[in-house]
Length: 206
Image (tube, rainbow, N blue to C red; front, side, top):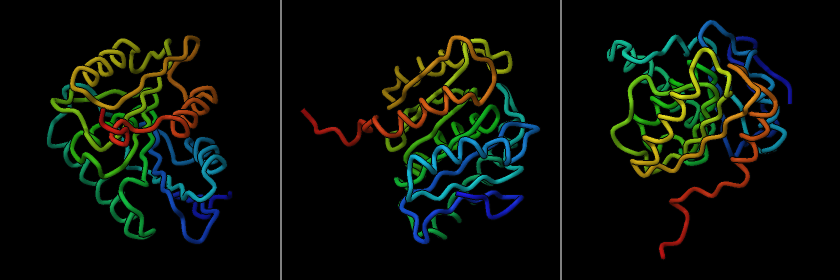
């Protein structure tokens, strides 16, 4: 799979994709920072389209102006909706993945728009505002480095604990030797989560 655009990178291996991944880079980064993850996802999911926009992510932190956060989430929702319409895909066949600020934006998106994507992969990010309810139609995968100096692993663990208490369908993977980085070990684990974790909403009721 090769990128076909230099600003919004697109990895397209089939004419009619059956899945969509939208990847969000960290604050101060570029779309190219997410290219390796996009290629890994494209290799693992041969009928997927991978779209990596540039500039949607910005610094997100606890206590950020709620209006600014709402505007960022709205811009992302418009972009994701346009891609879903473009490829004629169900919302459940789409996933968001982000690093750092991109991960935090993806989590905020899932909080505001439950079910607009089926999965969220958050690498080295956390909620800017803690959720008050669990997403029912989106599965969340949190992936973090134990030595992350940008977003502490303690905050990631607290976010996961809050999600669990709310009854969310979520996982947390922590790599002991890693910092704030999109490391191959975390990317491989993300692919494993996507391939092996059946969302709880698909489990038969006892």
